Image 1 (cartoon, protein in one colour):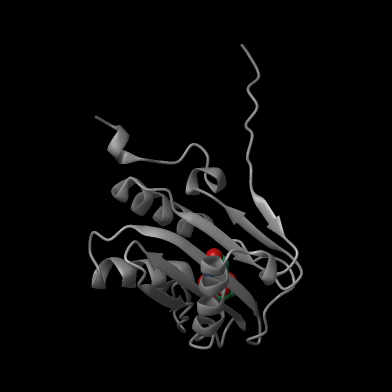
Image 2 (cartoon, protein in one colour):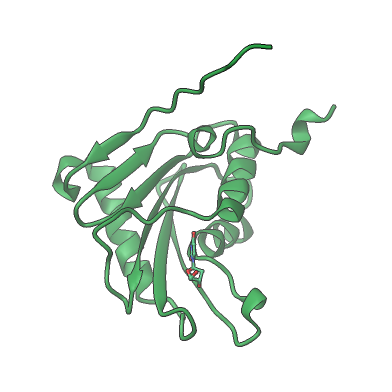
Length: 160
Ligand code: THU
Protein backbone atom coordinates (compact mmCIF):
# COMPACT_ATOMS: atom_id res chain seq x y z
CA UNK A 1 0.00 0.00 0.00
CA UNK A 2 1.13 3.53 -0.64
CA UNK A 3 -0.46 6.91 -0.18
CA UNK A 4 -0.62 9.02 -3.30
CA UNK A 5 -1.11 12.79 -3.34
CA UNK A 6 -2.66 14.74 -6.15
CA UNK A 7 -1.40 18.22 -6.97
CA UNK A 8 -3.81 20.64 -8.59
CA UNK A 9 -2.59 23.97 -9.88
CA UNK A 10 -4.86 26.87 -10.74
CA UNK A 11 -4.66 30.60 -11.08
CA UNK A 12 -6.49 33.00 -8.80
CA UNK A 13 -7.17 36.57 -9.86
CA UNK A 14 -8.49 39.32 -7.62
CA UNK A 15 -10.20 41.16 -10.45
CA UNK A 16 -11.16 40.73 -14.07
CA UNK A 17 -8.62 43.39 -15.09
CA UNK A 18 -5.78 41.04 -14.06
CA UNK A 19 -6.87 38.46 -16.60
CA UNK A 20 -5.68 38.24 -20.18
CA UNK A 21 -7.91 39.97 -22.76
CA UNK A 22 -9.40 36.77 -24.18
CA UNK A 23 -10.37 35.57 -20.71
CA UNK A 24 -11.87 38.98 -19.89
CA UNK A 25 -13.89 38.83 -23.09
CA UNK A 26 -15.19 35.36 -22.25
CA UNK A 27 -16.19 36.37 -18.71
CA UNK A 28 -18.10 39.35 -20.14
CA UNK A 29 -19.86 36.98 -22.53
CA UNK A 30 -20.82 34.75 -19.60
CA UNK A 31 -22.22 37.78 -17.76
CA UNK A 32 -24.28 38.62 -20.86
CA UNK A 33 -25.38 34.99 -21.09
CA UNK A 34 -26.65 35.09 -17.51
CA UNK A 35 -29.33 37.54 -18.65
CA UNK A 36 -30.99 34.69 -20.53
CA UNK A 37 -31.19 32.48 -17.45
CA UNK A 38 -34.66 31.16 -16.63
CA UNK A 39 -34.57 30.13 -12.98
CA UNK A 40 -37.95 30.86 -11.35
CA UNK A 41 -37.58 27.95 -8.91
CA UNK A 42 -34.06 28.28 -7.53
CA UNK A 43 -33.64 32.00 -8.32
CA UNK A 44 -29.98 31.16 -8.95
CA UNK A 45 -28.99 32.48 -12.35
CA UNK A 46 -25.97 31.09 -14.14
CA UNK A 47 -24.35 32.17 -17.39
CA UNK A 48 -21.67 30.35 -19.36
CA UNK A 49 -19.69 31.15 -22.48
CA UNK A 50 -17.68 28.69 -24.55
CA UNK A 51 -14.80 29.81 -26.76
CA UNK A 52 -14.34 27.70 -29.88
CA UNK A 53 -11.03 27.19 -31.67
CA UNK A 54 -11.97 29.61 -34.43
CA UNK A 55 -12.88 32.40 -32.00
CA UNK A 56 -16.64 31.89 -32.04
CA UNK A 57 -18.27 32.28 -28.63
CA UNK A 58 -21.39 30.28 -27.73
CA UNK A 59 -23.47 31.40 -24.75
CA UNK A 60 -25.69 29.36 -22.46
CA UNK A 61 -27.66 29.88 -19.29
CA UNK A 62 -29.53 27.65 -16.87
CA UNK A 63 -33.06 26.79 -17.92
CA UNK A 64 -35.39 25.43 -15.25
CA UNK A 65 -38.72 23.67 -15.51
CA UNK A 66 -41.64 22.95 -13.20
CA UNK A 67 -40.67 19.28 -13.60
CA UNK A 68 -37.34 20.01 -11.90
CA UNK A 69 -35.07 17.36 -13.47
CA UNK A 70 -36.07 18.61 -16.91
CA UNK A 71 -33.99 21.76 -16.43
CA UNK A 72 -30.39 22.14 -17.50
CA UNK A 73 -27.31 23.93 -16.18
CA UNK A 74 -25.79 26.88 -18.00
CA UNK A 75 -22.56 25.09 -18.81
CA UNK A 76 -24.24 22.12 -20.49
CA UNK A 77 -26.66 24.41 -22.32
CA UNK A 78 -23.65 26.27 -23.75
CA UNK A 79 -21.57 23.18 -24.57
CA UNK A 80 -24.46 21.28 -26.15
CA UNK A 81 -25.37 24.34 -28.22
CA UNK A 82 -21.72 24.65 -29.29
CA UNK A 83 -21.49 20.99 -30.29
CA UNK A 84 -24.89 21.03 -32.00
CA UNK A 85 -24.20 24.15 -34.02
CA UNK A 86 -20.45 23.77 -34.58
CA UNK A 87 -19.84 20.02 -34.51
CA UNK A 88 -16.22 18.97 -34.20
CA UNK A 89 -14.88 22.41 -33.27
CA UNK A 90 -12.67 22.30 -30.20
CA UNK A 91 -13.92 24.11 -27.11
CA UNK A 92 -10.83 25.88 -25.82
CA UNK A 93 -12.31 27.59 -22.80
CA UNK A 94 -15.50 28.02 -20.78
CA UNK A 95 -16.32 30.88 -18.40
CA UNK A 96 -19.01 30.60 -15.72
CA UNK A 97 -20.77 33.25 -13.62
CA UNK A 98 -23.64 32.84 -11.20
CA UNK A 99 -25.62 34.53 -8.48
CA UNK A 100 -29.07 34.87 -6.99
CA UNK A 101 -31.65 37.10 -8.66
CA UNK A 102 -29.42 37.88 -11.64
CA UNK A 103 -26.61 39.21 -9.46
CA UNK A 104 -23.01 38.12 -9.96
CA UNK A 105 -21.72 36.53 -6.75
CA UNK A 106 -18.45 37.63 -5.18
CA UNK A 107 -17.23 34.02 -4.96
CA UNK A 108 -16.42 31.90 -8.05
CA UNK A 109 -19.28 29.94 -9.57
CA UNK A 110 -18.13 26.30 -9.59
CA UNK A 111 -19.62 23.81 -12.06
CA UNK A 112 -21.55 20.75 -10.90
CA UNK A 113 -20.21 17.24 -11.40
CA UNK A 114 -22.40 16.47 -14.40
CA UNK A 115 -21.17 19.57 -16.22
CA UNK A 116 -17.57 18.64 -15.44
CA UNK A 117 -18.15 15.21 -16.98
CA UNK A 118 -19.52 16.79 -20.15
CA UNK A 119 -16.55 19.20 -20.30
CA UNK A 120 -14.24 16.20 -19.95
CA UNK A 121 -15.75 14.39 -22.90
CA UNK A 122 -15.54 17.36 -25.25
CA UNK A 123 -11.95 17.92 -24.14
CA UNK A 124 -11.10 14.28 -24.87
CA UNK A 125 -12.86 14.47 -28.25
CA UNK A 126 -10.90 17.51 -29.38
CA UNK A 127 -7.59 16.44 -27.88
CA UNK A 128 -7.02 20.05 -26.79
CA UNK A 129 -7.15 21.28 -23.20
CA UNK A 130 -10.29 23.19 -22.23
CA UNK A 131 -9.65 25.86 -19.62
CA UNK A 132 -12.35 26.56 -17.05
CA UNK A 133 -12.83 30.06 -15.67
CA UNK A 134 -15.00 30.39 -12.56
CA UNK A 135 -15.86 34.01 -12.02
CA UNK A 136 -16.67 35.93 -8.85
CA UNK A 137 -16.45 39.68 -8.39
CA UNK A 138 -13.89 39.32 -5.55
CA UNK A 139 -12.05 36.30 -6.86
CA UNK A 140 -11.65 34.45 -10.16
CA UNK A 141 -10.27 30.95 -10.59
CA UNK A 142 -8.80 29.63 -13.80
CA UNK A 143 -8.04 25.95 -14.33
CA UNK A 144 -6.04 25.21 -17.46
CA UNK A 145 -7.65 21.83 -18.15
CA UNK A 146 -10.72 19.89 -17.07
CA UNK A 147 -8.60 17.11 -15.51
CA UNK A 148 -7.80 19.48 -12.66
CA UNK A 149 -11.45 19.79 -11.62
CA UNK A 150 -12.38 16.17 -12.30
CA UNK A 151 -9.62 13.80 -11.37
CA UNK A 152 -10.18 10.10 -12.13
CA UNK A 153 -12.56 11.08 -14.85
CA UNK A 154 -14.84 8.45 -16.34
CA UNK A 155 -13.61 8.08 -19.89
CA UNK A 156 -15.15 5.35 -22.01
CA UNK A 157 -12.58 6.11 -24.70
CA UNK A 158 -10.06 4.44 -22.39
CA UNK A 159 -11.98 1.18 -22.32
CA UNK A 160 -10.22 -0.33 -25.32
N1 THU B 1 -26.64 25.44 -12.06
C1 THU B 1 -25.95 25.71 -13.19
O1 THU B 1 -26.47 26.28 -14.15
N2 THU B 1 -24.64 25.32 -13.25
C2 THU B 1 -24.01 24.62 -12.27
O2 THU B 1 -22.88 24.20 -12.44
C3 THU B 1 -24.68 24.37 -11.00
C4 THU B 1 -26.09 24.76 -10.92
C5 THU B 1 -28.05 25.82 -12.01
C6 THU B 1 -29.01 24.66 -11.98
C7 THU B 1 -30.21 25.29 -11.33
O3 THU B 1 -30.97 25.91 -12.35
C8 THU B 1 -29.63 26.36 -10.43
O4 THU B 1 -28.30 26.58 -10.86
C9 THU B 1 -29.62 26.00 -8.97
O5 THU B 1 -29.03 24.79 -8.75
